Length: 367
Image 1 (tube, rainbow, N blue to C red):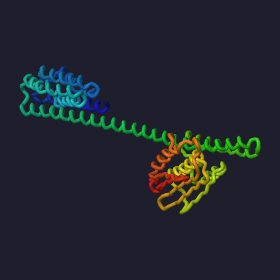
Image 2 (image 1 turned 90 degrees about the vertical axis):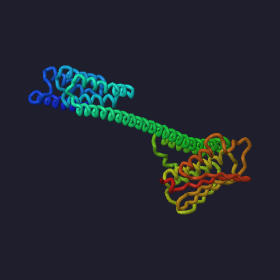
Image 3 (image 1 turned 180 degrees about the vertical axis):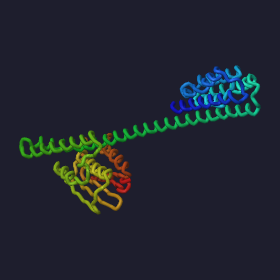
Image 4 (image 1 turned 180 degrees about the horizontal axis):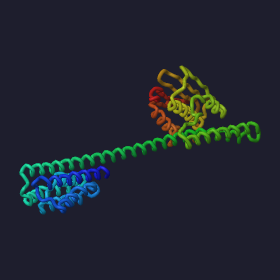
């Protein structure tokens, strides 16, 4: 609006100055007070051309026509104001209205020539060119503005879709983390509670140890769940740096478990580290939930660009135990975790032996 106001003031000043020149030295018609006022009506409304394009064109065009009827000269800047109003209608109005006004313009110019027979042919041609150019520029601007608006709407839609996808991904991540934390903790708590119940009357001290273990596991599970739900940071304990604690926790509940680590042990990228820890945790939890193992073994091998995990167990499936490939997260959750860091997960089942193997590419996780 400030630019249009400045344009209107500039055109008004130049048009009135041209009227003054006409009045003093040129034989272009009789300059009157009414003609000067009509010149103002041609230029000042340009300040509102974007808000009221059609009314502004009507006022400016009517003022120019009235000047011709009264024999008052139409200044070049007054005519330019009409052309600007015409351009605005073509740029901001709908296609039908702009086309209708464009179709009515040539008859209007012809009528003006009839009213003002002093218009030279070359001047008439120049006027027609000005209006044609204004209409073409207006149509181009309308199409460009529509394309810009469509592009902005598309970008907004894509941005919202990305936000929805990110939210869904985050919900899936939290669901997987909660599943692993809850499943692991409840499995240990169930085993320890069963052990405490079986020795409560005969060995109270053993029952006390089981209850203390339940308290520790519950406290750690609560801390980890709070970390997941209250902040972006992962629990600091969900890392291979705490592998020894994880192994000891399963040994404490009676699982015969060996650990073998080979290669150049080093810190892993956060995504790979968390994935490796969760695969180990979920696999060992499955061993407790689904079998009566004789023995279990965890192997971790560090390579130059990858880390390989293997969790193998030997034992028999108790009667009534749920299948490992259950309906919930389980193996599918582990596969999704490994896939997200660009790795591979495989499961092997033989007579009396079940193993989970995961290959996690360290370099891919860093990208």
